[in-house]
Image 1 (cartoon, rainbow, N blue to C red):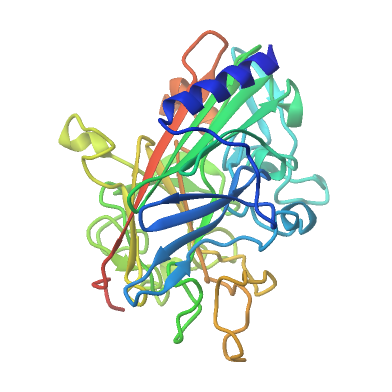
Image 2: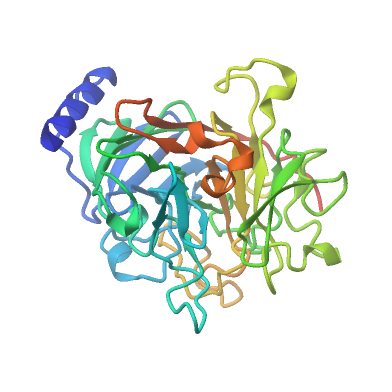
Length: 405
């Protein structure tokens, strides 16, 4: 049945694309390139990850604006990489106490974050566990000049999750757009599913001759006046907090640079114990203005750089948005050869702390452990029911009017 599912999916996806599918052959670096108008991108099977995304900036220079490795083989070798561009699954973000309950039965999944003497593997589960989806190889099941579809079969019991899940991840490029659709189908048991795209951005391609930091990027969340409250290891407490106008986490009342509030004492510990910066989940309150079409009725997030002029507007059907300001980067991850400044000791060819921004479209984090949020239909799926679906469209433009410091 598994092969039949994959074969049918491949033929359907190829037929629906409107273009002739061709043999899935990577380039010499193991990357699969697709092309749109004014945009090109490369992907690798490891984690169904985006590896390169090329946009021309306001000066007419092509910039590679996402992090990654030069060769696909590095993803499986360099284990320090923090989920570069992949699809975390089967449950993205954190699971409190590495456990959850479905229909009165408690399931325990493998822990992999915040180890202690009493819990050497960790206190919680991050991005699906130590061998989550973005640490595994997907299969290429459909491929055209402008789109690619990856698939993975996640076995029953893997990382402790109940039931088998079959998933398809489709990426496509259009006119200065990167669209993706993630579908996951439980085949044997009821199970939690929540996916995301864990892409690291630097809209200057690390080539800014004034700074390698991304704190000068302007960020805007027009529908996000609230966020999920978390404890000092970023586990949701179950409460929802207000992002009061002018506060550190206020990106809704007006666009502002990500580094704007770094002199405010409130930013200390904002991303967990002894952490300065952002790793927070904002809620997306789209329904306040009535019925909407997520594809055209307003972006939920905007990231912009005045230096390169590159702007990305994020449209999605998801109801939460995580932004991480790369607080954990420390200069140990090398840049790709398509990025950065060469032969200048003032600009090391590595990703510094705060050198990138992670944008994650998703549902309310750890909703499986917060029944009062009533996210069950969004996060728990069963055979014969509706599949899990995530859709997003990243739309690029050139706009050099980003908010000043």
